[in-house]
Image: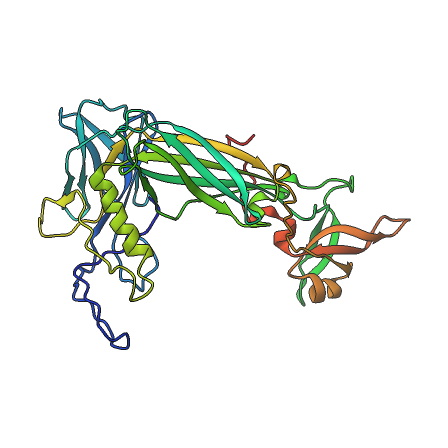
Length: 387
């Protein structure tokens, strides 16, 4: 879960919207512990994120580093997680016993201990498919799944989007800078002696972004455990489908209590825009501070085998999809004064005129850097899964 938790306790809303509200909540300077993630009982990674609550006017995340995080079984089995980046703890391939219950055991750097309740492994059916259709000139993507046993009923999804980026212009040129006491002297030369070589590492890139919305759904009131849920929407002419796009969805099965916890969190974080919205409620999870039982802990530990599915969409598959990067290039005389005046913040692309006798560049085209070097908008390392 990438959504940042916001913690409220006993919030009272004043009748007059002009009256300043002062929260009675007195949070410690270090904040309360926030636990995010799903224990993957199967072969994939288990990723747990630890952080601290912060004031509402603080948009940065305060990660909890140096903690010991262990998945414990009621059979006394233990699986330690490793901190891979600040506050992010990971272990690979737990392959837990489906007949046993498990919990998280967390010891923080300040000497406090936290335990989640023992929880059973939830049945999580496979994702049947990811499909898409044109909607309002954009692309709506759906996730589909079903559980013939009617046991799952409570679901959550996350996803990663990856798309290919091509620079608007290839660059055959580079700046040549001569250091002088009175100021640097600029000129443009060919990237190499062939005059036809360009750097593909600046032309082909990929960008990956995780989901940020809390996506949950329940079939508890339906006669069949079947879900067809909108996953994400790609707006018309978005750069995500400028060349090629891929989405990888992860599906989690939740307990009823875990689902209701996320429902409350969703209302707290997404539904407090006006006085007519449901007011924030207390987020009581299944994680407790053993060292100080009165200390609130934010989070709910669910356990299931995570299901994944990936699809690709080529821009050519989408009728009339047009992406315009709005890039333009200008002609610049190849002398230092002109470069300083017209192109000091641009990158050269190709020559316009050259001396037929010497081959020296007389003028060249230049464009904004993000129109020439795709690394400013993504990574030129091709993802291993890319097709």
